[in-house]
Image: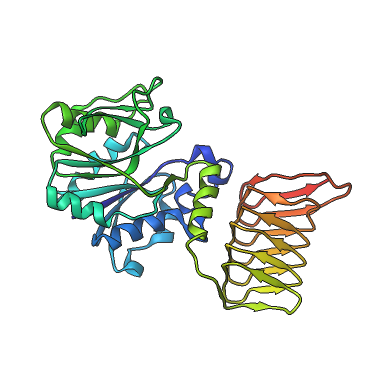
Length: 354
């Protein structure tokens, strides 16, 4: 069985951050989102993976390499434009051949992994296995209608959803999917929709088996979802300290402090992860915060946020909360002090606050 990870989207909902960084490489708990998908496939016993890439292909390739760090073989498949998930399957036929495969959206994280789902697919041998979960806003997703536990209809981002069962970003197919993706036409978005391809399978008598996801799942395409995924992953970490914490600092809860980190006269309340060679001085780092490598946080309070590598936040007068701060960003205080700040800042930005 092979794996196909889609990593070609533009990440428009995360701009300006994604003007300079692939959305699949935005870190959750200091690990790129894409790596969670790769590791899920690896844990399920899949060792041959194709990654669909687009405009950010060079960045994706540099970060992921040939797969050897996971003892995997990775092949890159270039998509000329974001023409839909079914189009990604269509252009991958030469790589996938006649093998069954898992398609995994590269900006998704599934708590429970996919090992048991792959085993179910291999044992029951339907033509397709789709993952579904209940959501409060189904109009934002592909939506499935079930009758008696059977899939009868799928619609991509319906204006009037017939159910609240959204398609999770993991799909399993056999080779009959190629017939479907070649038969369907582009949607109103000018994309070949995977929902239309699965609907083709349903209407032509192929077996499409639904599976309701019980654990959490996150599509990290929006700021609030990235922060929520960061929170959920941090809650699973065990604390460790490979850096230096001085006697005036206090560490509470599960806090991961990596090599070269310096913590001086600060309070850190976990769950928190602080990347290598970062400096925390005279600051408060609150729960659900991830700070990447080579950052400086001085005279600042921050919680429920993500700070990317080589950023500096110095003497901010109010607490930073629910923020995603890009690479090599500088945030510093200029008097007089305002009462509240909230940031979503792109890479290499510099902000002076009055």
